[in-house]
Picture 1 (cartoon, rainbow over the protein chains, first blue to last red):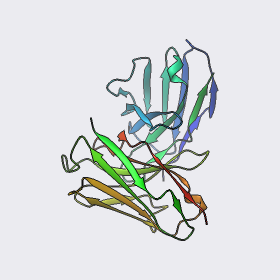
Picture 2 (cartoon, rainbow over the protein chains, first blue to last red):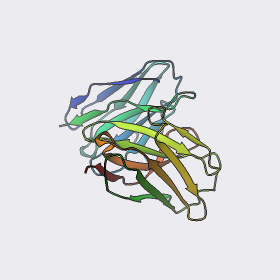
Picture 3 (cartoon, rainbow over the protein chains, first blue to last red):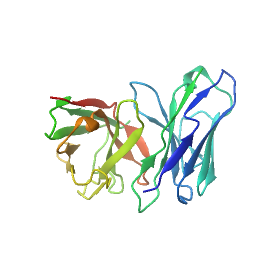
Picture 4 (spheres, one colour):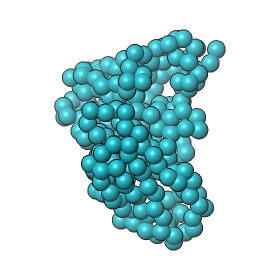
Length: 107
Length: 120
């Protein structure tokens, strides 16, 4: 199985900050990577797919980059609604889909 | 707008079978044969774990770590798909989500999730 290592596990930040979350795959997954935002009691929400394609309706302050084994999610200017847990997920063929451990973004 | 809603038993005894159904509204489960309908869970204090998915044709793909205990099915007449997980233990206590992808493996539509507790 492809292991996804996400860091940091917790990130403290303030409104207006620029933050970056990193996700590392144990094998080359090309750009088969998605990012989700998850708030307690709610369903996860797709932010980015194919490593850097913004899902419709997602604010442009979110961006993704990377390919192969190293990926990043960047929030350019944190807003109050952004405090949540973020997960990466690889969906490479011939492997069970796997998620990172999550990054809790807190004030 | 497509909506998914999980339903089923919230409390299951150890060694028994967990059964959940996902009802789909706002669209047909057979609208596109390339879409997969999946199950993902989150154990208390832990991250997300993909369980498996099914196509409306009935083809299935399961996480190898759960493969021996998982069965998924689809009922196109009711616009629903289901999950059965046998021989459950406390480790299967989790919030279970149903979801649909965009034919590529990332999950676009999600249910709100349902908590299943395994306890005697």
